[in-house]
Image (cartoon, rainbow, N blue to C red; front, side):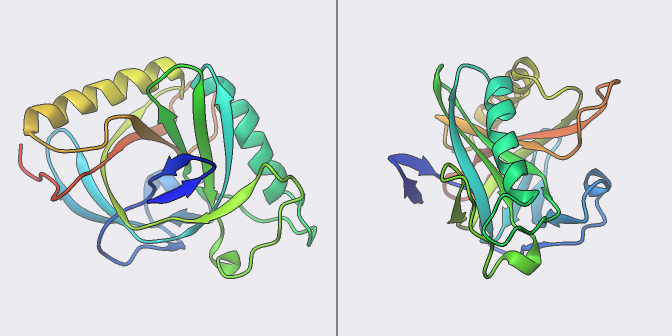
Length: 208
């Protein structure tokens, strides 16, 4: 685990080689690079994924809802990626955007975007001191994807449903928060691909 300003940040996933780069996944079609992962197993209710360590740009937002946290936090990160840095360079954003969603009201949301492969070693320094870097640790996620608007209501509904299925399967996972992944831009018809995920504790459960 990584500690930042008293906030425990458990990020990406367990074994395998997974970095940042080109992906043939349909959900990554809008981005030039994606955070790559290996699939450990699938069940009817969720997917178990492994990610490796990557460097991410992140920011912390105290907000009452996911929507408010995204408006503030994502705009900070986009400013950095669009040239608000010491080199004045613009970088392509990497999909997906990850949000650590707390399960208490008016808590800290952690919004993050992985840095492109060419800037993983020496990224430009943000002009905004509210944007910072961390090196994620390998972790394991239980993941569920869904289509629709990325709203707090939909996110809560899907994460609760995933948690219920994990409980039924006897899976052990961190329950104080979950992660929300956003792959696509908001579109009028709302048919965007999103994911919710919990960090697995111990050996993942791969059977229904």
